[in-house]
Image (tube, rainbow, N blue to C red; front, side, top):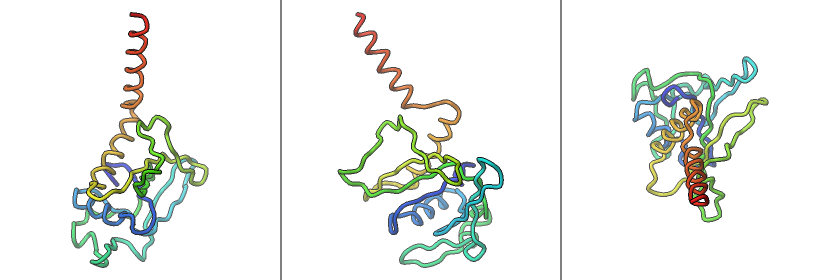
Length: 167
């Protein structure tokens, strides 16, 4: 949970999902589940992500092992369920990557027939993944309130082009 938003971080094995979750915990955010999340749909369009009882409060960090996030960060570091609002997919950064640089076209993943917005973050040494996931979450939240920086930029360019053509 990042600033009230239920975010599921996905990606291939060893992509940095748990380390990103650890960084987010250190920034005051809340863990729902690590390595496995159960998703239910109690009502149409409402997805709930929950933690299997066996792994509640636990985060596995390669080289360190299991940590109990409540013991380490306090009771606010864990919550056993939260509505799912956004998926952030960690991807390998390669020259062949099909990057959506302006994010004009929204991407989604369909779960139980419900479209969940998805943002792709490209992993590269030195990138602060926790900050990028936070920004992706804040940007999604702004879009839900009708504030889309990419659309504003495109509109600004189109207005400039129309001005240049007519003058």
